Amino acid sequence: MGMQDKDLNLNKETENIETDAPTTNKKKPIFGNFDFVYGFLLGLAVMFIVGGSTFYVYFFGIPPFINDLLVSRGAGNASMTLASASELQSGDRGYTSAVESASENSNGLVTGSLNMAAISRKLGMIQGLIDQNYLFPEDPDKAATYIYKGLLASLTAEDPYAHYYSVEEMQEINASKQSSFHGIGALVRQLEGSNEIVVTKVYEGSPADEAGLQVGDIFYKIDGIDITKMSVSYVVENLIQGEDGTSFDCTVKRYGKEVSMRISRGTVEIPRVRYGTLDEFEIELTDEQLKTLSANASASDSSLSAKDIGYIAFSAFHDAEERQTKQALDTLVDTAKIKALIIDMRGNSGGNIEVATSLIDYILPDDLTMYTEGKTEFAQGKTLLLYTRDKNGKGSEWYADDGHEIDLPIVILQNQNSASAAELFSGCLKDYDRASIVGTVSYGKGIVQTITSLKDGSAVEFTTHYYYIPSGLNIHKVGIKPDVEVSLGSNAEDYMVELKDDRQMQKAVEVLIENIR
Image 1 (cartoon, one colour):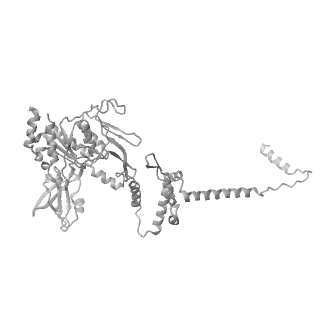
Image 2: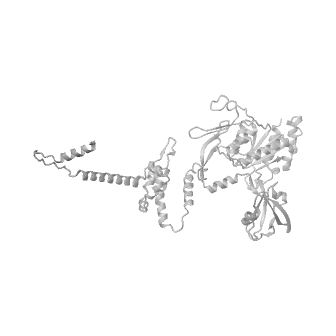
Image 3: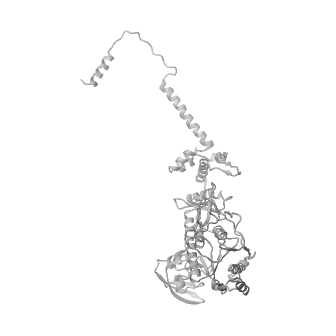
């Protein structure tokens, strides 16, 4: 018989045992049935937990760690449903909670971070009101965009450059920085009243330019189709634009006559840099300038003329400007064989710090050590271009290393609208005594913004660093002071002059001549 059978028999025998021992009544528990007590106590605990949690959430919002957990799991909207309209009427306690999370540092500045739980709670409350009472359809994407924009806008009292960019805005910004596009190389606009589509610009060397299209031409027919009653957007998108290498027949009205041509489509490079020698801009040296040149220059340089002085101007520092500026410099130095150079930074609003340092590097040699020698925070034996520092004293340094140099007398033109990377450019060349500056004090922007792209294609931008030119100067709200101060005037008309009549330009030529020994 197995062990299991034995156990069964034993139990059976035990049930049949009789005893003569007196019967004793069992004591009843004080609280009666223990199951009931445990249930009652458990119920109290649950009520205490639920009630306490409700009280906490009502007065203080969802605990941050719980809110973060919900958001990280893709349930960020869950915390937005824990408020009611009656709470808004009685005053939002979440706002007080958000304020209390901030503190003041030793400089009196408010520091801290947002109480996201309280803010989520209030947003949920407002969204509830909109859902219940708003008369018109709501655009949730637009609502989200303005929430993000509002958060970044709150920084603009101290940081006017803080901004949130939607996906569409980032696409437009990136497109505006491109130096080429697909088309014919002409700009058009539709006149009010007559609805005529007129050519306003033709890029030099473009397919439109090669076909003979001119500014002022009015589009009349494309491939035999009369387009006089069509919108400009329809004409451009459906009749003018097309695959590279294709072409179309075009008839325009020019001074009352019809002119026919065939225009090809292709990739058009947009010129962003203006350059040439002074004689190409119809600028000739004055008798006084020639006299000064004769007195100061060596015999080999006494023949200096307008064709020996180069001029280059661009309005921003982006990839297109970097490529085109280097090409322009090569043309002026290697082909035109210029002996001096004027770089016009007037109205240049700045741009990419990498582009600015690349162009500075193209001009300076790589071994200027006057600002790095013996300083452990910098690389030794290299030309320092700039360095940045954040609020923790950390940052980066940029050095010249391309092996290229332009060793010519240089004058930089600047004005009050020369800012950021333009100031870095002029300040760096001035620090190394490689350029003189003519004009007025520059804008004074010595801070760096960082654009951080988000996963959905949007981005945020705000100030993250100060930057310093090689001498260690931070020019924020100070600007770069010119070596020779010349103002164009206070009226708009004073600025609307050709280069040959430009007082600052004339002074730049004089300074160049004086620097040629």
